[in-house]
Amino acid sequence: MEETISFKEFIGMLKKRTKLIGFITICALLISAIVSFFIMTPIYQSSSQILVNQNKSGDVTYEFSEVQTNLQLINTYNVIIKSPAILDIVRKELDLDITSQQLNNKISVLAEKNSQIVTVSVQDTDAEQAAEIANKTVEVFKKEIVTIMNVDNVTILSKAVALDEQTPIKPKPLLNLTFALVVGFFIGLCLAFLMEYLDNTVKNENDLEKLLGLPVLGAIGVIDESKSDQRVRRGKRRREVRGESIGV
Image (cartoon, rainbow, N blue to C red):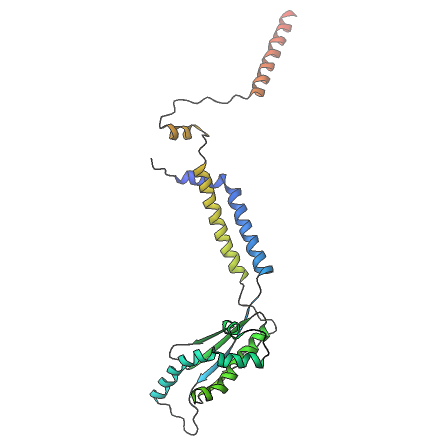
């Protein structure tokens, strides 16, 4: 027979397992807070921008074909920026104690659609080093692209700057705590449902009726022996008092 649970039973289950759900939720929040504030290393990001455009002097007029050529070159430039031909030079000039592949993992290149501007972003545990790597990368690229592609159409638009009180991009404690709250509550709720489902003990006449599939005709109450003894003693005293009164 398929088992269903009513809203009233659901609320009753929540009330009965409130401590369990609350305990698991609090544990999840504590673990998230410890990991976010004490274990995870803050990561900072700095970005530099370059403009891909052919240098011209005098009256500046741009043809549509030239713009399209520059846009097509951007896809190639995005690959070249993260290539060993550029990163090896950056690593040597900054004296970085990491491999080119590790440096590659720190750098991301983003070009907006139909835009000649390319953003080079660097993530690092040190905000100043992130800015240095971003600036050095675009500087080396601007210099080396003349030799690699035999073109001179790159201009540094903006340089990365490390702020004194720069906020790390990750971890994000508030987001982590919110996620832990939801996950902790969900796990606690699932565990409460599981415990309720596996609990096959008979607690009342309703459980017995469901188990046997028979109607309950009556129930025997529980007699508190201490209260029963008190009533017997009180009755005995009354009889003794009546006896003494009649003897008088």
